[in-house]
Image (tube, rainbow, N blue to C red; front, side):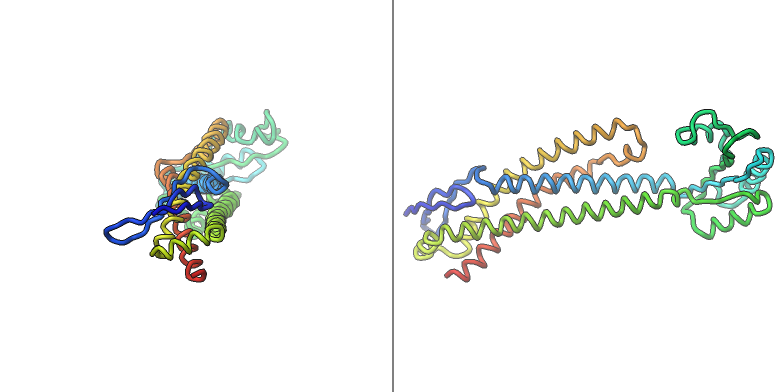
Length: 313
């Protein structure tokens, strides 16, 4: 027996009673039409973009932390160049006998001048006639992580050899940057959660609307022996088709945006940004988003329909 049924989640064609086990099954024919697939596509696209941003920030922070782990910079802050160089040589010798030092390097003055040139301009020198005294730098690499105790030990060793020395862990310089990255990561997580909630809410409203529109058809199906679970499967399958199609479209749109933005940032040539490139595990996580969106939509539709049918009939 066939009964025409039009569900708002798709184009339902017929209701058919099957023999043998006595089950009733509504067989909808769904296509990518109406607002729901496009709502899902937008939600999936925004979710993928937000997750990609969070993963990129995580990669950047992890790479920077790995590079700076164990790094210490010693500055000899002395205006008189002859005393500055003498203390730098004494500090290098004192640190060379310190346990746990993997490597140390007295940075040549021309490299220091090149580092500060973008801020102070060309021609800045550290000699006697320099308008701005530039400290001597010693780059130290320690074995393992840098702790406050190890920094204090280095300061104690340099107290006599280089009284003008200032010891700083390299990771301390980028602590504000790491804090900002952590905040942006939490923001990306919050966006993903909010978009998931919005997707579930959109499916819930669509399912309730479809139930209201097709109330008479549902009552007839019940009279023919259909159960709540069989009716819920109709909505679940219909929204599953819409969610799968919309999720695929949304993922493609997000992929275009991610590749375009990634190409723009790759042209900057900044090491920290380059280290944030997405790896294959990150891409697997992004591919999982439309799958998770379809599963969430189907589960939401099923729970919503079953809950409404219990109150309706």
